[in-house]
Length: 406
Image 1: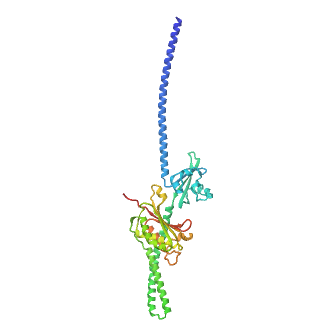
Image 2: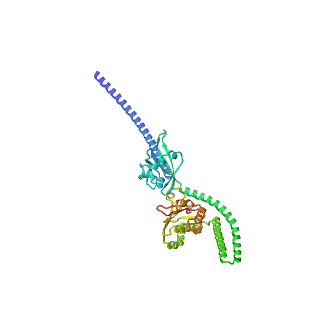
Image 3: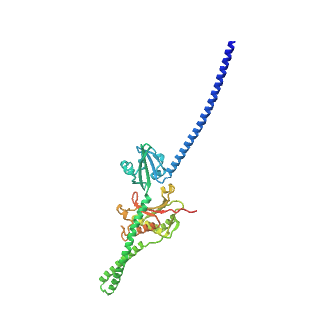
């Protein structure tokens, strides 16, 4: 009997243990479900955080790529970690080709000994830019350290700003201010000189009637001729100082150039000079006074022809600036280049080339290029001259591009 009771007790204990185990299992299932639910919530939060970070990364990436300045990020050794599209355009490289290389890979034109002195100097880090020439453009480069939250320096960031157009417009502005002062002074002097010149010519003509000797008459004739020559120069001067109002119309500048070349081709062929051109495709629209612009182009073309007395080639090209075309939100300018293979211009004469009456050629008034400057200035453009690579001269005219309205 006692064995039966013991067995019953054992069964009861077993049942109680089983029930306790079932309860524990049920509690474990509840805890597991809670943990799963918490994990799902954490996973969702993590996914949202990753998505937000990815979205922020893409947002910052888009901002970086949309900047009109070049941005280059390097480590402490100067190796490129990140370079935006604008910097690649300025340097003419692909990001994949320069990532991991020394920053000098972007600036082949700078001598290697200048890296420490220019790119990593305190001068740059002080917020003062340094001008460099890069692919025919004037760039201003700034530098600042990249630091972590704890203040540790991780590398450097370089900012490249294209100031080519600004530099040329500033050059035009300085020239315009000088021309305005010179023009006002010249006009006053011209009027003051013209009155006594008229008297000299009048009295010389009267004197000639009373002279009998041929020798004396020849001398007076020389006086009259010199007075007329001086009066002609004064007339040119007054024409130069006279302000004209351009009659603007929107035209395809390629067509204006083609019409101008018709007049220039015969003169060029007489001097054994070939004219060729490469024009930007499509409608290269500018707002200009067509006749004034033809005068500009003819003056520059004739200047190039005169610089090639033994023959040569004059190449004319129209294009949008590569940088302007590739970077959004930048108003494009039309760039018109005239490159001759002539004798070139001495370096010391380049700053004076647009000055009134400055000329290295005999028998010229020296007003052709100043008139070019004035006309381009009226059109809110810029004109620049520089020595060509390998010789010759390059004239560059910048005119604002006129967007087509729908």
